[in-house]
Amino acid sequence: MGTLNFHHLRLFQAVAREGNLTRASRQLHLTPQTVSTQIRDLEAALGEQLFQRVGRRMVLTDAGHVALRYANDIFSLGREFQETLRGQPSGRSPRILVGAADILPKLIVHRLIEPALRLNEPVQLVCHTGSPTELLADLAVHRLDVILSDSPIPPTVKVRAYNHLLGTCGVTFMAQPELRKRLRSGFPESLDGAPVLLPSDEAVLRRLLDAWFDRCGVRPVIVGEFEDSALLKSFGQAGEGFFAIPTVVEEEVGRQYEVEAIGRTEDVTESFYAISVERRVRHPAVMAICDAARFELFA
Image (tube, rainbow, N blue to C red):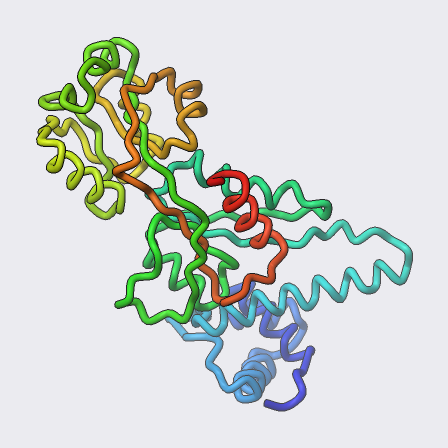
């Protein structure tokens, strides 16, 4: 690869922003042919196709998304450099791009991320939720710095990334106070025939709970299955059934959803992972997340 041409990079940024070659050319006061030629020169220098033509639209490829992120950072740093030399505060905070598996309890996600927001140097949080497969695809092309998940990378997924175990904990079974009174005595046998709210089949916790119910010889009646953990708890708050949560957030869930503990078990343990493209984490905000989880949240 030759020397990076920042003029070409600026043209690329304009086309990516507009999504249309003609509109970008008007803004740049250049002909579409000139812009198109210089975009091709940039692609040749990088060895990657940055756009795909879809009708009249210019759609970024995966490589184009990576290039745009770097282009935005390069020009933002350039502005910061000029402002610093002029003695003006840049007002630019470093960013952390976090992907959270949608099945994770939102209270756990907040507890995990919170230490990154307490750093001496403020950071700007950008948080995305989605399926682990979607998030791993974004991590692979550097749209994310880290993924928070309840499971490590499956061996079938061909993404070069690393699992960092943050911690494990048992689970607590919660219910609305009136239902809790009925189920408290004789736990866990009391759960036999009781209404239960469960995570969807994709969740690791669901498989662990199904196996635990079998070992205990109890057959709860499944009232609902949920992909969204907050929605599951809302149904629990309304008294539709009991549900399981990580014990580390028992107090917060009890206060927020006005539910109480039926019982606890360490025979079902949830694990939580940070997944990054680095074997050794270097991003200071990701380091704060990992360290706080290991030494505070799951200590």
